[in-house]
Structures are given as C-alpha cells and as structure tokens.
Amino acid sequence: MLAQIEKGTANPSLGVLGKITSGLRIEFQELIDAPPMESCLVTPDQMTPTKEMIGEYKVWTCFPYEDNHQLEIYRIDIEPGGKYISGSHGEKTREYLSVTDGELTIECGEDVQKITKGEIYRFETDKKHNYKNETQQKTSFICVFVDYR
Picture 1 (tube, rainbow, N blue to C red):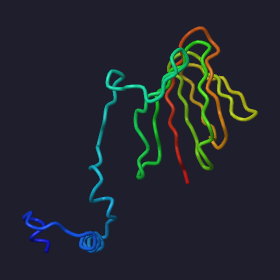
Picture 2 (cartoon, rainbow, N blue to C red):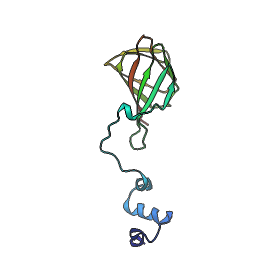
Picture 3 (tube, rainbow, N blue to C red):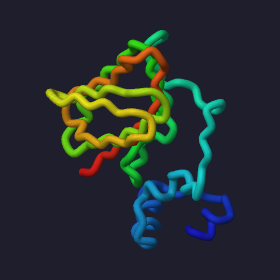
Picture 4 (cartoon, rainbow, N blue to C red):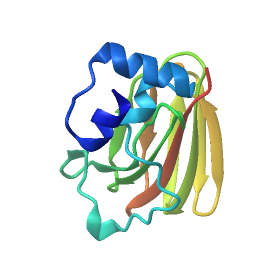
C-alpha cells in the first residue's frame, strides 16, 4: 500500500493514515501542518489591521496563535485620547507589553499602570483590561500574549 501511495496510484484511507502515523510515532496533525519556518520577517507595509476603530485604535496580528507555540504577538496603535477594551483571556494567560512610542495606561481590575517608551510590563490577563492613551500623541506598543496552561 505504501508503494502505491508513493507512486500516486492510491489514496490512503483515514485508517491507513492512522496506521502510518502510529508506526512513525507522530501525531496525524504533523502530516497536514505546514512545515515550521525557521525565520520570518513581518514588516508594517505587509500587514493589514485585524481590528480597527477609526480615531481610537488599530491592532495588527504579527504572529497568530499556533498549537505548538501557545503565544500570539500583536502590534497596537492607540490614537490620542483613545481606548482599547479587552476581555479576559482566561486563567493562566499573561501579556507582555513593550511601548515603542508614547505612553500607555493599563487598567486591569483595580490595578492601573503607566508604561512609557522603552519600558516592558507583564500582567495576568484573567480579567477584563483596558489600554488607554491619555496623551496628545499616538501610542504604539507590542503585545505578546502567552497561554501557559
């Protein structure tokens, strides 16, 4: 059967694929996943905002969640006076923020934290949280979201 599959003269059934993956000691998903990239450069001109409220904020997904990495990376811009509201991401979730321009205010429960350019902040995201720009210039930051279950 393997020879026929290799020649392209037969298509394996799910049962046969199950036997192949079992014999190779790999998960079925590994057969159909795209090969991992060793490196990837994301530039602003390649990205389109995945969320946007004109006059408030723009969110770009730089690297989406993958089962084998369990993190996501976003670039977020908030206009002067703008606010971006985010719900809870569930238990055992955390965000790391690095402000690249301006000043950012984070409200998470009772905690309020101001972060300025060059600073990095970490917090648990198991509750609703808000990102605010209380200044007169645009604020930009990178958000790394980690699911550590």
